[in-house]
Length: 124
Image 1: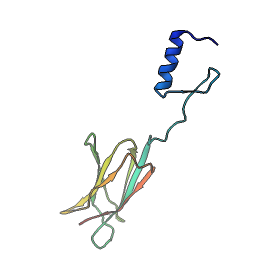
Image 2 (image 1 turned 90 degrees about the vertical axis):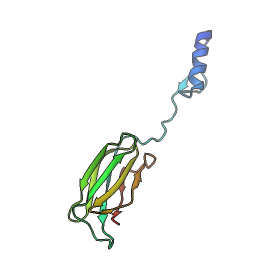
Image 3 (image 1 turned 90 degrees about the horizontal axis):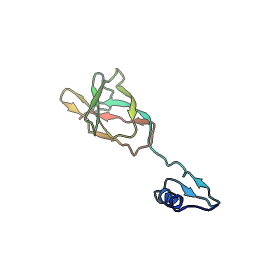
C-alpha cells in the first residue's frame, strides 16, 4: 500500500506519541492497558486506646489532600469505622480524635492498589 506524505506524517506522530504501535503490514495496534488505580475503595479499621481496647464515640477523619474536604465517622461500640466510595486516584489523610487524645495521621495513598484499606488508629 502506498502512503502519501500526510498519511506518513500522521502515522509518525501517532507512533511517537505512544498512542498505538505498528505491527507491520499497515496495521496499528493499541498498547496494552497499564495498571491504574481507577475507581473506589473502602477505608475502615478500629480506633483503639493506649491499652489497645476499642474506643466508642471517637471521631475518625478522612481528609482529601488535594481539595482539603473532610469526611468524618463516629466509631461504633466495638471501635470500628468505615468509609465507602473513597476515590483511589487521590491521596487522603486518616486520623482519629476523642477528647484530648489523637492518633497519628496515616496516609491513604493513590499509589496503593488495594480496594480495601484497613488500619487501626491508636489514640495517644
